[in-house]
Length: 101
Image 1 (spheres, one colour):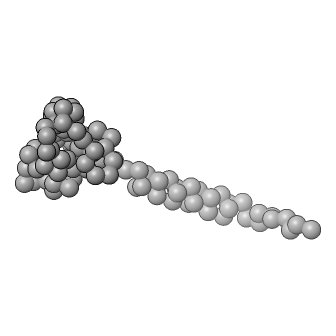
Image 2 (spheres, rainbow, N blue to C red):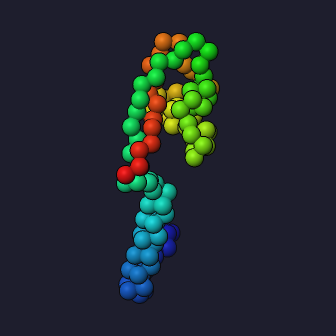
């Protein structure tokens, strides 16, 4: 036979439930937090030439203030390129450029 759970103190139960819900909400907000407002991404088109790789293109368009790995990641994300260099000559890809507000 199953034991029945009885809530003895409804006030304590309500407070505990509220704390649990707030805690879960905070964890979810921190997990899915995105930075907005200070950066706007704009895109320039780049036509891939023979011998180009994502790393070479990233090196051409990057500056010293940002890690080249971040530039490679942004180019890959903007063009849905997964893994290694899956680009070919003549292909037009979007190059994200960072514009500060």
